[in-house]
Image 1 (cartoon, helix red, strand yellow):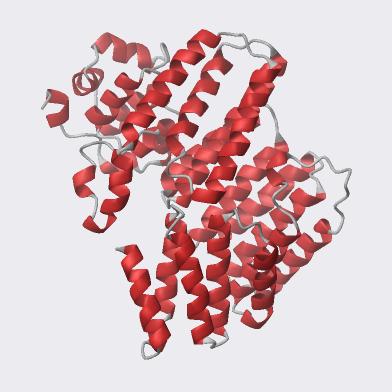
Image 2 (cartoon, rainbow, N blue to C red; image 1 turned 90 degrees about the vertical axis):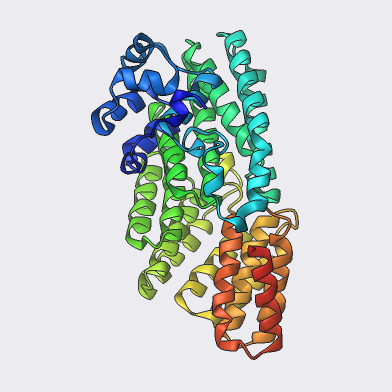
Length: 434
């Protein structure tokens, strides 16, 4: 064991500090070292010993030069300061794994296979970034954008766990060539691509219920979009943060973020489709707060904007998923959250009939919500059969959010513990969770 591995790392209070989370997400080691010194009591010489660096190198980094991009050094810093791998876009470090509960072993096994992929991808991307220099072309930009669309498709179909190392590697690659690009037109395009990759990374962590890390990447995405004043994309990221707040039972934050997203979109004449999506995010926040009047008003606004969509609208690619099916199912989910199962059930059932069968994670979510509304209507056996379908989908999609919803459904089944269908389903859910 090296000397650095034997030393205690940064205090836990610092690792949960929003400024440290943001610095780690951006791999801003100047800020990380400054925070370690100012708030953690780690002077440069101690950082140098822990991370196997020279004191002069640490001092240079703290002044902002040079940037650290070498993966070996990044891993030494993570290990020396005991920064969890996920905070720096790495796989779980070897010293983190013993603390993982036994029931998560199948997930850990998958993660243990990822360090080689993460390191190989990142090292390759770093090499390509150096070689690329300023030779950015339109075909390169189109290729990068196409890869983002492919990442989102695969995320919908299989979950984002296996994609994350490649997405983070490409994000670092784009940021590397962005630093070497002087053409303002290419700079704007690269900023937009980097913002989308950061949002996608944040989304994969959000789906994994690693909310602090997700927020760090969403914040980085906001910063990148703000540098090119892309108000519509800023609205998109704020909408992600609003949904995250809803999942964390922070209804007021969710509403505030959704309204801020609407304000940002209006500044850039947001399209009717975009405004409809943003009002539905506000509806989720109101539903989480159990405010019936405000929820119905937000739903009406969403439907009003959706009704104004025209074929000539110049919708951003990332909002085109919000179609009639999505509006219908989101309306049903908001009403279900309010407890109005009678109105919610037919809407969710209709959406499932028209939703693409390839969107496995989305179908798992929506099937769960259909089962929940059926249970609210006291149709226990039908609800269990529907939830069984969601369980089948969860078994082939890597999504901790889906698994959490199913565990929630198991709790909802407790009053029906004498119903054979409920007993059988509860056992199946427990087996999946284990």
